Each structure stands twice: as C-alpha cells, then as structure tokens.
Image (cartoon, rainbow, N blue to C red; front, side, top):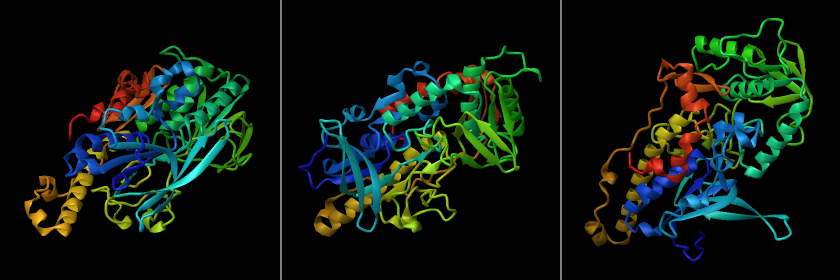
Length: 448
C-alpha cells in the first residue's frame, strides 16, 4: 500500500494499531479526508508494532487454550481492513515509534523485518506529519494479557509457555484486584479447580486443587464498583479456589522480574508483602495496572505531571497543545479520561471532528497565503466556523467483570446488572461479538 512516489502527500500519522488507532483511521477515511479540499493530497498512515489487532479483554480466557475463541476473530490482520478505501489514501507501517520530534513535526519509527534466511533486520525511518494522533495505548505488566507493542507471535509464545506449566502448578499468585487480575483469577480457578454447582460453596475444609491468591492494595477488589458487588465477586471467587488478601501490596518478588518476561514467566517465586509476610507460588501474574506506551516521548513537558507518563492534553478537545498544531492523543496513553473502552469509543467522533476542523482551517490559511483571490473564491466546509467538539467522559459507575464462563458482576451508568446480563454482554466471549464492526470500520459507518 506504500506510495513512495507521492512526496507531497500531507500525512495524517496515527501511532498505535489497537482500538483507538484502527477506529480513528476508519473514521478519518470515511468522514474527514473525503470532505477536505484536495482530499487526494492527504494520506492516513497507521504505525503499529503488530500487523494484527487483538481483542485484548479476552486475554484472561484466551491464555488458557486456543480453543476458547476462534483465533481468526481474536487476532485480525490490519492491512486488509483498509483495502476498501481509495488507493493511496492509506498506508500501514509495521513499526514502533522510537522518537517524537514535535518541533520538527516528525516521528522516528523502527521497522523490523525478516530476511529470506529468517534473520531479523531493522531500520529507522523518519516520518514527517501534517497531523499526528497518538493512540499507542498502554502495556500490561504481564506479557500474558496484551500484545504490549510486540507481534502476536510473542503473545502466543507467552501463552504456550504458561499453558505448559499449568499441569505442574501447585499454587498461583496474582497481584492486582482490578478487572484484569480478577477475571484472570476466575478463569484460572474455573479451569484448574472446576466450576462449582450454582448454589454450592466451598466448605472451610474444602481444598482447591490449585490454590490461587489475589493480593490487592485496595480495601476491596474491583474498586470502581460498589462494595456489595465487590463482596459478591469475592464470594464467588472463593468457590473457585481463590482467596483475596486486601490492603496489602506485593513489595518485591524473587526472581525480581518474575512473571514479566518470557524467560521468567513460569519461574517459581517468593513474594514479600507489605504486611511483612511472604508467599511462595509456582506461578506469578502481575496485574497491577497499565504502563503507558510513551517512551518515545522524551520531552517531559508533554507528559502529565503526576509521574504516570501519560500524555498531557486538553481533555475536552483531545489536543496535545504543548506539542504544536494538529497533534492529538486518545486512549490509555493519555490522561483524557479513566481507562475504559466505552470512554474511548465515545471520544473517537470528538477527536476526528476536531481533526477535521483543524485541517480545514489550516487548508484555508494555506490557500489565503498562496492567493488572496483564491481565498475569496474558496468556501471551506462550515465546520471551519464551528466551535470545537467537546469530549465529556462517562464518570458513572460503569464496569462489567466476567467471573468465569457463567457469571459476572457489573454496573451500567450506576444500575446494577444481574449476573446473567453481564455474562450475555461480556462474559460469554469477552466482547468478541463487538470487534468485527470495530475492526472493519462498520461501527463508524455514520458520522456522529
């Protein structure tokens, strides 16, 4: 799809090929680029370390077996998704952003490839941009739970290694009481210890085949949900052989990088807790939060001051104002809102409306500079006269958590959902039923 002979193209560069990046590319190609004057002079360029997009929420179950989900729906190749658009309007670059030079308005991208003898090679390209959207997301501490700026081969390698260790595991430790940690604990508990009858509980004398321990620094698991839902979750987890230790942190583990690399993924560990106790386990899964993929940004003025390494932006317009004109960010790499897919999907139309407005204004100014007479006869899209679109995040109690393959807890805009509803919406396939429209662009068929 590369168009090397078109040096005058104005590149709308998108960094990141997951929910935010793929959705933004589709929306721009459907509703923004076609409405720009001289639309053929613009090209949407998507840069992603992986040539496949993943339904990341499904990882807690997918890590157990390839039979849990159709693999061709779990992992979807990105380039074919964009064949539907005019030739030359889109380019996919399989690479990793390594440096943002916002003053020169360019990004350095390392592109990896394999030679005919299967050796890895790499080169660094410098890509200038007319507009930049940063949607690089965030990585999980455990390589089991996300692509983490790597290829799907790396994730599959992690899963296969972990699966091979499960038959010999005598205990499992998980740090983190958020949705990723709790869903992983529930899936492992059900897979290893069996699904209990609907109305039965483990008696105090019952011992699970493989005890699983979740350690959380919070006063309850799932802190975004009300305490009664957290208690319900904990009660059901106990039926799956999962115990929860609250108000406690994992201070250190030995080996020090246990659970966070392929080489230490299945290493037996000893964890030191903040309550001055230790726990030994056959397997360790760190699920304590996300790390923004922003290491390519060296200018700290572009990052939030709280030390989170999230990109600091105008949370209403989604512009990274300190990075110069026509630079934006969205998703977990930024501090626009609490990390949640429903907030991200709500933000896509707002982001793209503001990109459209800025591109139209820039185009009008360029025309005026070239020729005052041309400016007099040019009537930009009415969007140039409109005010910015404003993003308003959903701050209600909204979170759905699957607890194995038959139950779940959750709330939608403050309304408690029955377990079967959570199962029907999320738990049966971890949102896989929704991703087809997202990846293909069908969800963005109408401008909103």
